[in-house]
Image (cartoon, rainbow, N blue to C red; front, top):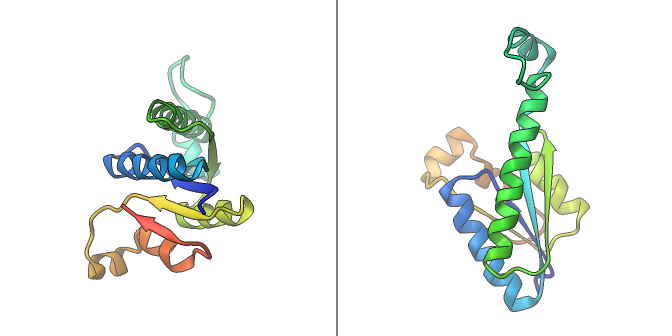
Length: 146
């Protein structure tokens, strides 16, 4: 049924709960869990604000964001394996979260997206354009919001 399950993961409690639900489903269906951590790409102007930094800091803002996103994705992968998932892959991508999630779902031909909700009501979601609201509206596959 669900052979490829995509879990966008940002390290929040809601994302951890979504990952736990995805692992449960993957164990039932012998499916694969694909974890995606998205970080925001910074412009050259934004990067220039951090030109003076200590020696041990990465070369630019994008590098620091990418490294942190990799740590978050690796943490999620370890959590999934510890919870009993046998097939897990983690990915890190730069971009706008909702669009990047949708693109990944289409590229990897996932059967289900499981993502955390921030707990906003429908009016707040509409006004703020939450990631979960955008993904549920744009995805071509089923979406489970936890």
